[in-house]
Length: 224
Length: 224
Image (cartoon, rainbow over all chains, first blue to last red; front, side):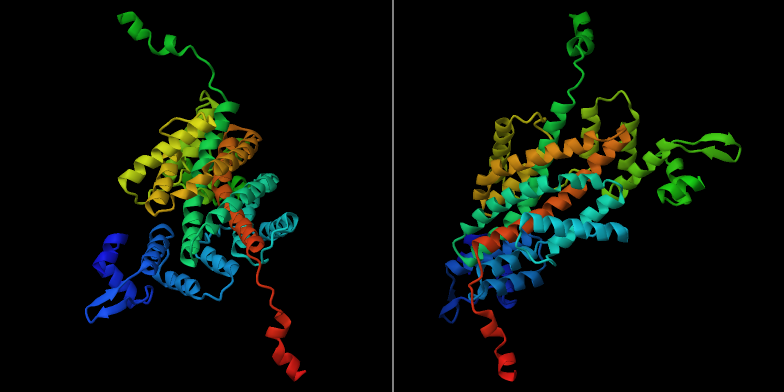
């Protein structure tokens, strides 16, 4: 167990806790005081830490993911869906009922138009409708003019995401990639979007070209 | 003031509070007990509600945005930058120093490669480096293989964002569009990405086509 702790960076008491909670399978006893831990334990510990540290999941949810990973008969698509659902954002701002109704229709139309094979009650379809309803409520429904542009970008990103997941070497690794990629990918995307906005704004609204040297360093010139 | 409240949906005591805090300019007195409020007050109230309700900004930050809006001599790019900086995500997960150093280099290279005109100390450059460092720390640095794919998607989205902002009819309206679009756009994008992932996964990992009827409704058949 000391070795397992060293190779993963997870403290021994934490490993013991995961064993007690059933998140980590028991090692193979080699003597009454010695147990052997193998590659699967290392993989599992990485998964648990990724779910808790990166995904911010409570232990109860980690248990559900571990259960899904251990069910080897489960189709891959279902396993990935279970992993993805652990990191669904809960976005439910206030919106008036009329906007809510209109937003749901907008989302239904979009899913049909893109030919996306997702259930109508997908949690992200609800989250998207909530955001759209918010836009309509605050009087900026015209932002939805760009919904297809956003959807096309999301498709490219999702394709990269799935390529990244497909590189996984085991169900544990694939699930870990879903969670890590989705959570850190959201953060990366938000940051990239702001950087690209900064660039786009600098190009559209160039600073009026004041003669900076003359304005700012006149004192230096006087003193020099 | 009663009319202003009815036309914007903001309660009178709240309007009085905004007046006291200097967020809303005083109306033009038409008699000792009557003040006239015009289009600019309606616009300002919409902006304040968008910043607080959608952007989740504390009132102190709202004050700073209002100040920026009122400074008519300010170049548009600076104004938009000030608005955008109010909704920068604070993402700072733990990462080891080696990963941190490597991540910063990755981000610097990316910004140079894309030719983005943004300052090196842009808060989103730091946020992006933090996410990248996290990926490296948890052993999934290969997700960064897709960074340019993500950046290209972000550019398309940012271009839509700026088109949306440019439709604004006043500095207030443009700032409102920056904040509303950025915050609700993040939520929309996260949801769209998950829907597109669901679709991409369904295509890559189709369910094994078991004869569902035979497997699931054998009881009905027996009873029927």
